[in-house]
Length: 51
Image 1 (tube, one colour):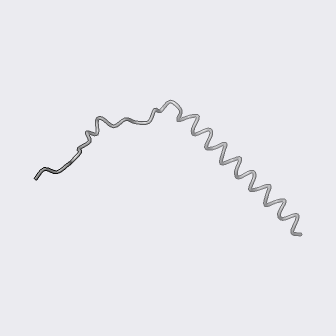
Image 2 (cartoon, helix red, strand yellow):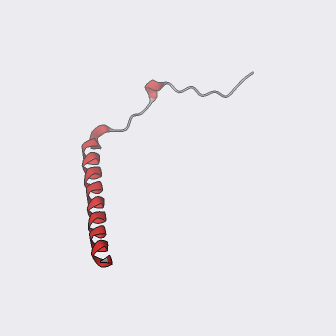
Image 3 (cartoon, rainbow, N blue to C red):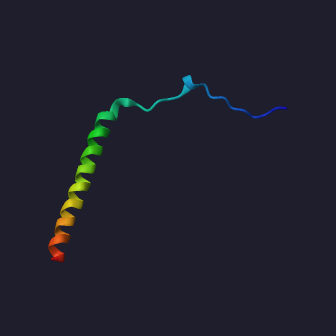
């Protein structure tokens, strides 16, 4: 019984480079704030147009 079994050593796992974590966090927060701002002003305009 010869099965093709590939065993991965967890010590060989290549982690993501942590160099850009702060930039990723800032970009995510700024992107979400920008999206929420666009949605907010869109809803304000929609409210004034439907009155």
